[in-house]
Length: 357
Image (cartoon, rainbow, N blue to C red; front, side, top):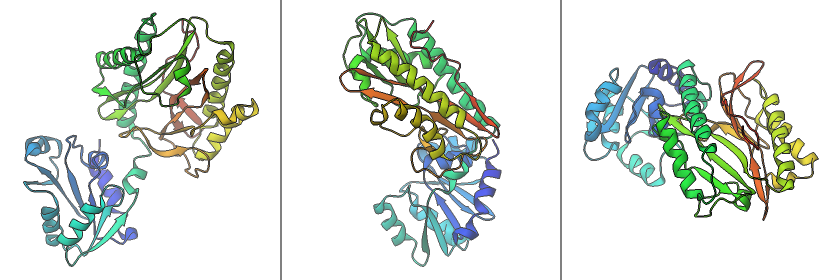
């Protein structure tokens, strides 16, 4: 991945941001700009230079992951060495990530950076990250592949008496067997009426014939997240949920069909939501249609009511409508899709059937 090109693109924005330099502290953004995968790192970016900072735990890791930048190792926090580097580079106006700095850190930075004006900057790197390059798309495909493999393995092992917690653990183990570093987020497994909760936390509820099984899960591969939801039946589910599953499939397909470069998040959301509303279940679709996925599980662009995010070609977003009936159960079906100029490419190969073959 060309981290230098990414830094150049960001540096070109500094004049418009009215900053001489930009301090990056959010780890997904640090990774995007440098390739560093550790748990503590910062970058000071100027139009013609960049300095990477970390602590002594990562000196060697940074040496081979960030070989093309000046590297500074510190003992007692990054603020003093960052300010020293900024002074050396003649920085008068220092941009910082407004969404990545706590108020306490801001106060400490202001005290340390005497004589410098601090400029809050929001969403600059995150916006660059919307469009995935070929290497990022390949990583997302690998993450999705591990997710698909885990789903196929788990569906074949559904059985009376297995608990939600046990099945969630088995899903996570299968993703690791398929090549995942770990789960991309906390796995959701919900049986029967529990599936009426969009973000149910797995419990010791045991699976019984007639339950639906809602599984929202994904693999993390090379730092990139997969996100997929499937709702399947164990035995014969209530007829109402059969109908809801058909409805959600139709709504999801309408959303997928609406995805193309230039469409707004609100437009795609409306395409799927209108199918559910027309069937009389609008009040039971209680969340947005989807979100971008990449180095973070939830990132832009957003697919939801009121979103004017225009989808760019190369973005990867989820399309995940759901209908949730309290006391009965719920259905969500979710796929990641790559936005293209004339439509989209669906990443999962897993079927969406209520009764998987």
